[in-house]
Length: 127
Image 1 (cartoon, helix red, strand yellow):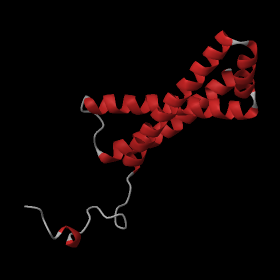
Image 2 (image 1 turned 90 degrees about the vertical axis):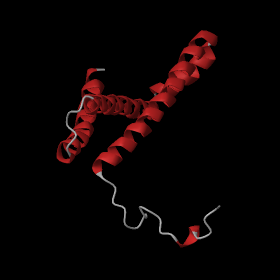
Image 3 (image 1 turned 45 degrees about the vertical axis):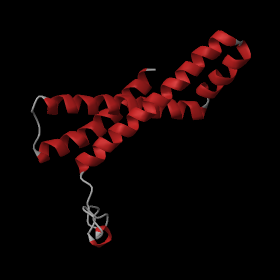
């Protein structure tokens, strides 16, 4: 039979007492960057389809991607791809049973932020 006292039970963990950990925020950011990378795949497909369609369609999307806004979007996409790649690498390391203690996991989360930013800067300077 259904529990009639559902409203009387406390929520666990309640939002007012829950403190997000660095590793959980990093994991959420890996998921967000995966979605961003997937969205960027649509921009690349749009660019390729426009190149195959007509000069005016290609001119529009190419002009958009070469503008300051396009540069900003592509820089963010580069960071997202690097961060997502490093997050997947971190999970592979965890799957093998390494670096599972809290301090090392938090250091890896900070290292991912620094490494993704560094790789993005290197990529931006190289291009």
